[in-house]
Each structure stands twice: as structure tokens, then as C-alpha cells.
Length: 187
Ligand code: FES
Ligand code: FES
Image 1: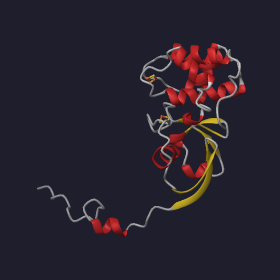
Image 2: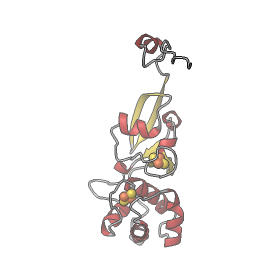
Image 3: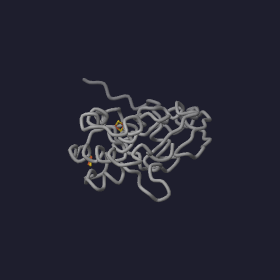
């Protein structure tokens, strides 16, 4: 005869006392600049940068798709370089300059690459668009007028489930052909 399952375990779900005995999650005070605004904030050491941006700073333009470094939807710029915010701990951003999609438009004007995305119908459902824009912004800051091959190479880590890749590449190339393409928004 099989043993009955042990129902006397002290799992946290079954035993609220066990849960309340858990130490609070450890936190660290960090300072970072996001879209040009300085923030001092106590972060839980387990939070990702994406969670900090979305859940604490209300910057929900940064999307979480796979949450494991595969899709690029969460891409933001850290010190000018594209990173997957889902795979960066928030504490690692201490002292960093972070730019999110909310920081691209300046004084009510879309950045050249944002405008080009609209003009070339680059967003379909739009879920991947913030990440695509951030990677494209980083590309244009180093190669102001990329050709299609350079755009494809740069955007290789940004997946589009709508498969609108041709329009996205076209938009980034067009943005690079415009004066001011290098100005990607607030640093
Ligand atoms: S959500 Fe970060 S790479 Fe997919
Ligand atoms: S526009 Fe839908 S995932 Fe890219």
C-alpha cells in the first residue's frame, strides 16, 4: 500500500506562520538616472531592471516578453548601450544612465527613428517596438547612416512575433538618412 502524502509539512503556502518567520527580502539603496531624471531608491536585490522601471517608476513602455534574454522586448540603453532589462539586476544599475522608450521624444517631438517607424508602418501589434526603437537608437548613435545589412545585424537580438522585419529595417535605414538621426533623445 502506498504511503499517504505527508500533509504536515511547513510549506509557506500552508503555514502562514512559516511565511511570517521569513526574513524580509534584502534591499540595497541605489541611485540611477532614468531619461535624465535622478532617482534614489531602495531596491530589492532580486528585482530586475525591467521590474524597477515598470513597477516602481511606472515606465511601462519597456515590455517584458520572454523574461529570459531571448526576445529583446525589454531593451533599454544603459550608459548608451542596449541591454536586456529583464536580465539585469536593478542593483547593477547603480550609478548608471538609463534611457527607456519614454526618453526618446523631446519637447513633444518624436525622435527621427520613432517618426520613421510610423512613416514605414514598422509597428504591427507594437509589443516589440520599444525594444526595436532602443536598439535602433543605439545603432544610429554609432553609425548615423546604416545600410540594411548593418541594421539587420544590430537588430538581431530583437524578435518581432508579427514578423514585420522588412518594414522595421526600412524604417531604421530611412531614419539614418535624415538629418538629426544621431539625436536619439535624452541620455
Ligand atoms: S523580455 Fe527581456 S529579452 Fe525577452
Ligand atoms: S510588431 Fe508585433 S511583435 Fe513586433
